[in-house]
Length: 245
Image (cartoon, rainbow, N blue to C red; front, side, top):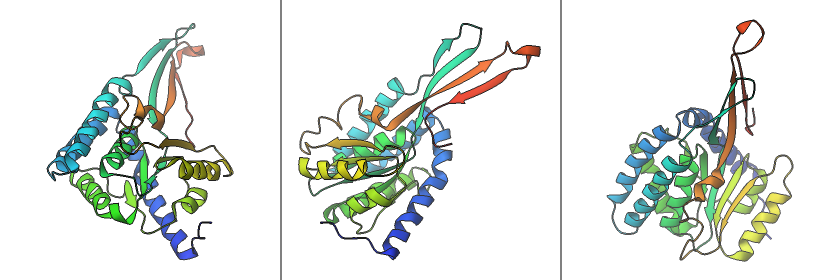
């Protein structure tokens, strides 16, 4: 049975979540290509650290290349009455990025890249053994001019309880099958909108995190409709998506 998080700890989680969400809209509105540019600088910073950070930087660049190919293009879909429909992608909101003792800096970098380039903000909850590496990744993000507090590191919280209480839209986790099943059950028990669960159970080969379409699990689709055939010739704009507002 997991411990119950105290009021002070949950207040800290709520504060960090609010800080990340406060800069999320700005980040999401940058667009994919601008986010790729900033995150490319992040990859350079990470790669300069050497060691396990070098393959982490390679995985960051891989997902940035995939983002340019998969989610940067805006698709035009002409309508039957002359309106213009544009299909594009956006971030979902706040993701919890986490894992058990098998989580590596390479896997963490892959998870975080996919979440960020898709237009999300993130809370990190990592094992104590990976705390130093997580702090280094966040420090390199800030050096790359990514908005401060877009990503925050939780300090010693119980991941399962954060899953229940934090205002998250998704969870990306690397863990053994039993742990992932337990997480999924807690997510299913939450009230309100369903939370996206992106689970990797192979911490060695990372078949999911290293897949070309991994980042598609972190996006939502939106449609922008411009109608110039309205009565009186007035243009109307309608934007639909799965965002919270």
